[in-house]
Length: 466
Image 1 (cartoon, helix red, strand yellow):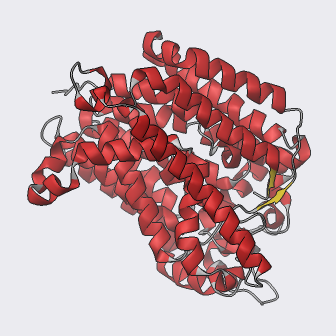
Image 2 (tube, rainbow, N blue to C red):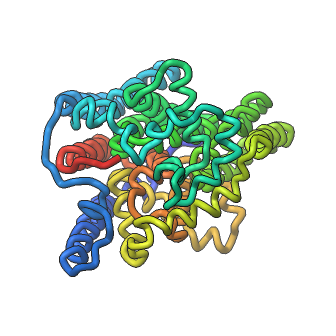
């Protein structure tokens, strides 16, 4: 049984549609105001002798207005997607839409990266002394790497891992080692792999929504996922790869649960568990995954055999890494210690606990705040507290953005992500545009242009570090 719901924006007489878009404009303006406030406060603290330890706070970047070879391409992609994207999303066949969305997203990511030039924007990003590729040549024995990985996490040792390798489980480094071993070594191939994986979000998120019973909402989300401002960091960091892997895992989970496919469920479990070995923070991907399980319950009885296959595949990945010599909990404990050995100990929690949210606005765009406001109104938290069972009646385009927000807030309050979250929280931020169907149709093109303008301004005014 498949439940097909219609977005509230298409229902005649719906109060959310009839309401003036003024509240949306105020919400989007306040979101951008948060970014401005974080910049002003960060600068004021620096002048007061209490720096927050991030260049161009809240961004980890250098102020450098510039243009580059990617500028005309980025403007072209933004204009075409904003003008034609909503119509094509409605009329194209599903498979053609997924191919077009993926190609457009890859073009958008690459064009933004190329604003900084080929070497600075792509080929040289992952080869700096803090990045993964600086360690690839030192890996000559993968079993020995896994057995001794935790012993090299803490800093101030002769053989300490470089910053990003130490800050992640070994799976992240192994991805780039594998690329090198198959002849795709070097910064260019590594960056292109991140782009190729990161662009999968434009397929994975709509596939998730469609599998859960709402193709109209899935189609509406595609242009917003293509012009996702976080594409700035997808093309420049491994976190874009992490976002693509985990989003694909969530999408496969939705397909497996709604179509009762054991093999697909096993693939979902393996990918989601693999995420745990790419980044410790990806434990929070459990929040969108649980949202998918709840939403799948709306389409009929849960297929427990499929769930069992999913869990079994995930456990197999965990057991394999453990038997190979890497115990995840030891790695996590040592990473927390390493975190406070570095600059994080000087970054004030009182500033970053809210300035991080300004970076989420920059990453997901001001429309994310509008979507979340509308999703919260539709979910009606007070009614949910009175009758928690109402959670099972929420549509995918409502629950998935709220799940992404919940994961972000949990990560924020932990204090283990102070600054740099414009890239670190990509795997959670990509679920915020899933609620694009909540936007009134007449305003969608305007919000797409706003999203594109946000990315273009950031990328042309700042030289991002990651």
